[in-house]
Length: 120
Image (cartoon, rainbow, N blue to C red; front, top):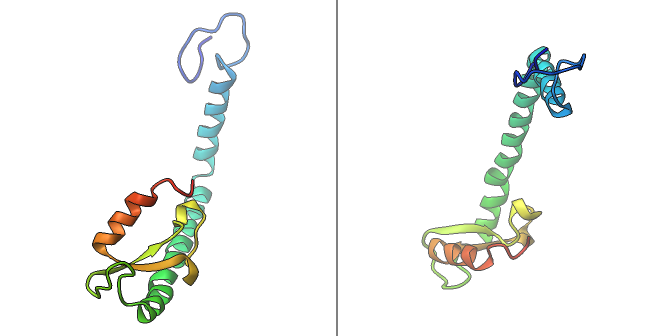
């Protein structure tokens, strides 16, 4: 008999797989095939919600913050202003006003390089 996943010949085993890992891989593939519609519906729902959440920041938080803080905190220029997350969203930060600051593009890049890996 041969393993269903890799085709390795199996001696003296009544199982269809050469290892528990290949049995798991086969079960995962089978589940994905059998539940393709359910998985796709979940993915659509997930990405729709994700877009809704990220849209909230762009529509409400950023404009309010930019009205109140319209200059770079380092040099004071009002040109090419960007909103910087002090603690990035990927490192557990949020979109609250206390976690945001305005910087021009140049100082935003400098600050990102300076604090890279600081909150990990």
